[in-house]
Length: 454
Image (cartoon, rainbow, N blue to C red; front, side, top):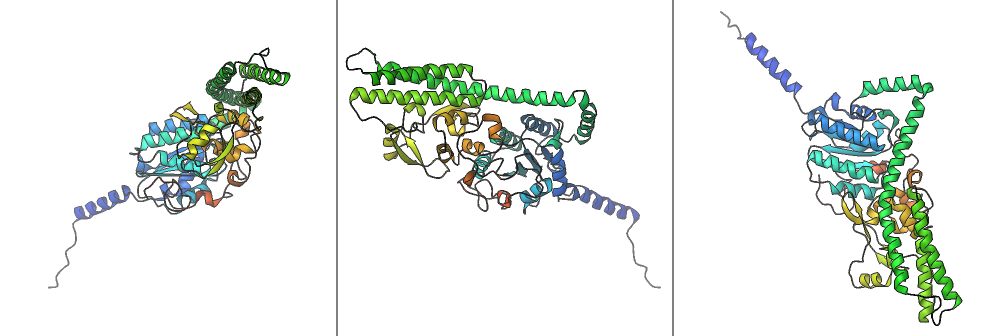
């Protein structure tokens, strides 16, 4: 009799099918649910996307908190949290193309992190420095720090498609948007404009309060210079030109105090520091006349701290991670640089401690503009956080214009402001290189010395 082949029992077949189903269900590999198109679609609705396979990296509550913070700041910042095995080839360029929105894109991929940005939102140097500053942190701390620092230094506005303030609220956003359209004639549009205006006023007021501390220090220092000079119009040897110098200095001192008291927006501060600088130059002229020295040349103040007084020469200086540039310096700082020592730099308070004023945020643009106006300021600030922010098209709307030409060359901002829908019309160089190349690592868009490859 011919042998009959043995077949597997029904229970064994069922177990095998169940194991295959479980393996497929929990496989970490990317699927249609984690395609770039899916991520882009989610980011058009909310600024934070967490892949289902990466939920252990960032909880839903933490993602909602980040999303709310970004929306409240009205900035085009996009955050994606993806599993470690997600494909990285052309990830940023593909995501930017699929999303179609000008902005800053940060991606946490396993325990790695990198970011790319349109140049109209943040310069390559600022973005590299920002990425490098958060390397090595755990997911929540890293994304929180990156978000806070990015929002303080980036340009642009949030895309209109975000709508509400909770991550993943697509259906709710649609209902709110529909309702807003229906009641717009009844005042909905007016309320929205009023809310945005109030938020902008609150932001400007906070920036002005921070500036007021620095400007008051400048005015106080100028007043102390007046006292130290100890000039009396009736003293022996005083002539009309000396008295005129002294009167101009006194007038500048009073003008600076009055303008600061009347300031209502950050951009108003520029006229204050202009007055202080005019007064300091008058004092320099008076001192030269009293001592019988040649009258000083009208030069900008010392770049490192305008309280040092008018500069006496230009010196080559290279900021950390930046390119060399010629800056106006006082005699003391010129000597320090010539001896290989660090200059005495003006530091101000920030949310992250004391920082040089050029790395302290956009509010210091009007302050610096009063001291270094015209075409001088862009060359001095190139590669710094302040210079990068002032290069964005949105800066003038918040802090005023007239600080020199930030429009071309290294400060070119591109055609679209952050938050605008440009589709695939963007500079591929802003998003080039593989994942990990943009934070000062090897590859396209690198630079700096943050170390470590991905």
